[in-house]
Length: 169
Image (cartoon, rainbow, N blue to C red; front, side):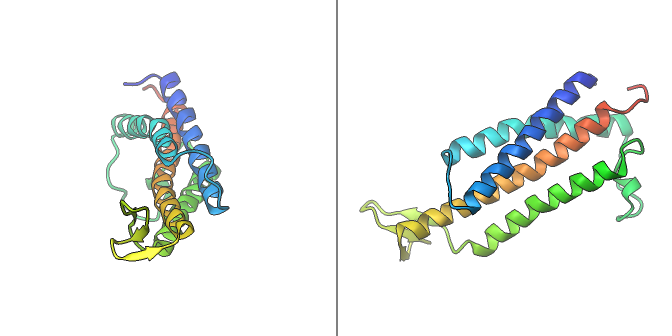
């Protein structure tokens, strides 16, 4: 079993993943690309994945969780000691990342690529301008960051919930 300090550290890392992913999604929506896509998604994954996995495992082992009895009952998804406002805040932020993913999918027109002669294309057939190509690449990056941001919300919430539980671990 992981220590409370370790879980709090993972929760903070996931919180940093939320801020990193959310900030980059906002920058992409405003037409800015502050860092390369490999760095952006890679760092988001490094901040998110360990904490998300730790949160799932610690909650599964600690609470012996199962499927909730009632789908929309908050008590069946959230440990009893977690304040309702924290669960609602996590849900709202999670919904924001979900909305970013959906909006990126809606505006994605195809799979962007570049031919050897430097022509920008979508789906190997449609020739597009460089701006259209870059916007489509931004949509793909937004989808990746949205997924990682949503996982980061879950990881931060789960790790913090288990770390702040006052029952014996």
